[in-house]
Amino acid sequence: MQGLMHIASDPEALGRFLAITGIGPETLRAAAAEPHFLASVLQHIMDNENALVTFAASCRLAPGDVTSAHKVLAGEREYDA
Image (cartoon, rainbow, N blue to C red; front, side, top):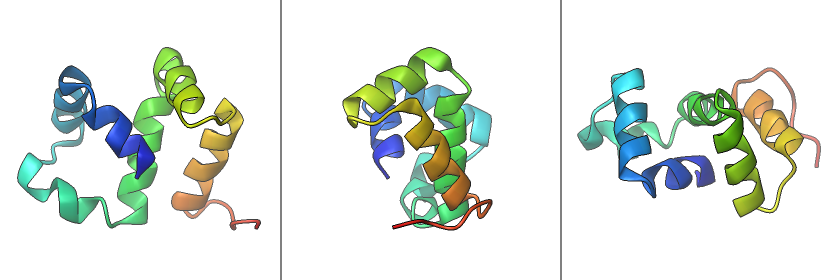
């Protein structure tokens, strides 16, 4: 969810994300409840190194932690507590 909030904090970035995903603002809230959608949000952030570094820093995470979270949300890896 933090990834989506990060994108939404920049209207230009949000517009690009909505255009790329084809999702409309009216369905964004419902989509945000789906892990695979949240994985696509992190993928979108990871596709731009500057966005990844900025997002990771704002969350006080290493970029690799974002990658790990993406894998969990995408079902590629189990969550390790």
